[in-house]
Amino acid sequence: MSTTNYLTCSKGWKSWFLTLDHKRIGVMYLTAVLSSFALGGLFALAVRLELFQPGQQFMDPTTYNRMFTLHGAVMVFLFIIPSIPAAFGNFVLPIMLGAQDVAFPRLNLASFYLWMAGAVFFLVSLLGGGIETGWTFYTPYSTTTADSSVVSALMGVFVLGFSSIFTGMNFIVTIHQMRPKGMTWFKMPLFLWAIYGTALIQVLATPVLGITGLLLIVERVAHIGVFDPALGGDPVLFQHFFWFYSHPAVYIMILPAMGIVSELIAAGSRKEIFGYRFIAFSSIAIAILGFLVWGHHMFTSGQSVAASVVFSALTFTVAIPSAIKVFNWLSTMYKGAIVLNTPMCYGLSFISLFGIGGLTGLFLGTLSVDIHLHDTYFIVAHFHYVMMGSTAVAFMGGLHYWWPKMFGKMYNEALARVCCLFVFIGFNLTFLPQFVLGTRGMPRRYFDYPERFQFLHQLSTIGAVMLFITFFVMFSYLLHSLVRGKPAPMNPWGANTNEWKCSSPPPFNNFDVPPPMENPYDHTNLVFDEKLGGYRAKQVINS
Image 1 (cartoon, rainbow, N blue to C red):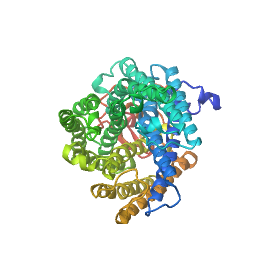
Image 2 (cartoon, rainbow, N blue to C red; image 1 turned 135 degrees about the vertical axis):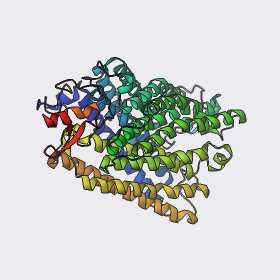
Image 3 (cartoon, rainbow, N blue to C red; image 1 turned 135 degrees about the horizontal axis):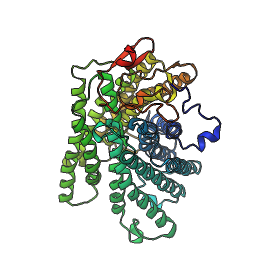
Image 4 (cartoon, rainbow, N blue to C red; image 1 turned 120 degrees about the vertical axis):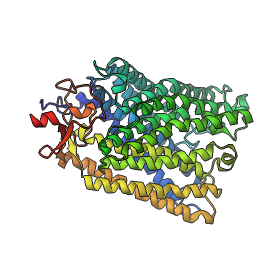
């Protein structure tokens, strides 16, 4: 087997920044989104420390507004949306297919630099003093505030939209046109089905956000009335446009996470995935239904009762394909030979946290209950259970699952499992109290609060500090593994998808010999080899 891999095939900064190799582009995306995660996490920690006690601690109200706005904008637009599709999708998708690269390598590199350009606009907004509109840029506040950083932030969103669209187009064409002979639709790993559904949303929904941001810029610069009522505009129209994109965007975030969890559960259970076709088609169903429920964000905006009832019913409907996935994951684990390695621990954490996030969403989809919970901390908790507790936890699971494949190094498995436990504890300590705060009437986005809420806010802040320390330890041992980690075997987890049939790290062209197109979840032909420290096919061992 060739010892030349994508990391060593050519050296120097130009070989990376001008590369057309999907694996290097995936690694560059991974580095960028992890940096964004660290930045957004610092903003979040600052917000939680300010709320540790009533009254002003170290930020005035304006600074506080800028901090939580930047936290939301950086986390949503620079981390959660691109993290799994752009980083893991770019690295893993062609190898899972058994292809050499994506369909349009140059467009792939252009997408990365568009993402970087969009991130620069956000950095300019930060250096310019920040924005205080909230990450949703709701009008009329975003059109009437004198803060000029709003325009640069919106330009960042506009440019990031092009990156997302180009990435989605690339993945759709790659899956349709680059599958080798024998790789049928129903031999594709479920992660690819999830990426395919995500790409459809990216291509169809993202232009709406881009146009909305552009209209907002035009209104601010040219004073043309679109959303500002003082100019004859309609602020509720902005909400319709924004959520028509942003609710499908929730599934841009969560669908790839579900795809990762399907891989983690199948590999960790040492058992064929239960209900493969149901999980696959549920990804497409989520992508379609996600376009029909944006109005549930607007139950208090004055829309008609009939519209609210329809959106409420559709909200309950979209829960069905998500529940199908969860029940099939649980059925996969039933009587499986479960191995509690780090990726599997993150998979189990995802199921628990996503279950809480999904069930609390049913309260918000109920008209009578949502009226009372709207714009309270209950919304904050629900949102974070779906975004942070589900998407980010699945991202961490995928990071630990594919880290040996990406870099050819094993991390400290015992320390990684401990960190997974503390992520689970710290997250619940941070956000479970916020459900109680919301039911007791604590509004979100407020700089101050009555003393009766202090204990719950302090619990939440302690959990946030625990999360910050845990993520610091996590990134430390991952970086340490690059220098001192043991060489990774070709297949440390006993998975049967194609990326585990090439060396770790993969060769430049992904495979020295084209892999056989088998059932990706058939583990019966794999045995653990003590000498290799990983799994190999039985016939290879016997020969």
